[in-house]
Length: 132
Image 1: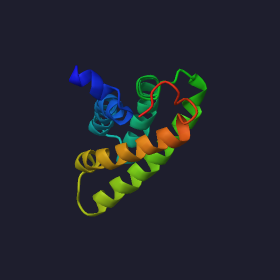
Image 2: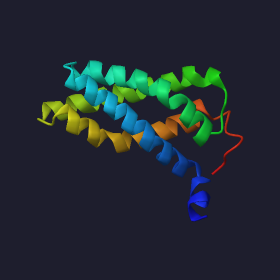
Image 3: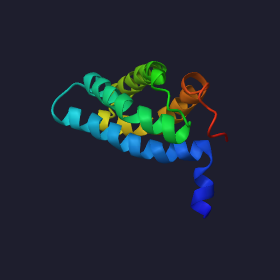
């Protein structure tokens, strides 16, 4: 019962869905690094995979949207996240932090920023089913 009440809160739903989405996206990133791609290409490909995987789960479960036309806004928000991610990875790389560790460090701040972008720019008109 307590868990059902928690799931009603939009940000909590975002975190729970985000955990699954993050595991998927980071696994893609790590796999692309492992096969030898440069971290910029690995992040780009992982971002593309993430957009495809995350759009429906985030839109439906978190924001109550079934509007497939929002994929373009969703992709735009992920493009912003990608650019910030690359800048952060480069910054960490310059101080000797591996892309694996740098990518893991960036998960939380990028997740928070992603929630804000999704709430304000992507699903702001679809926010009719689930209110905080």
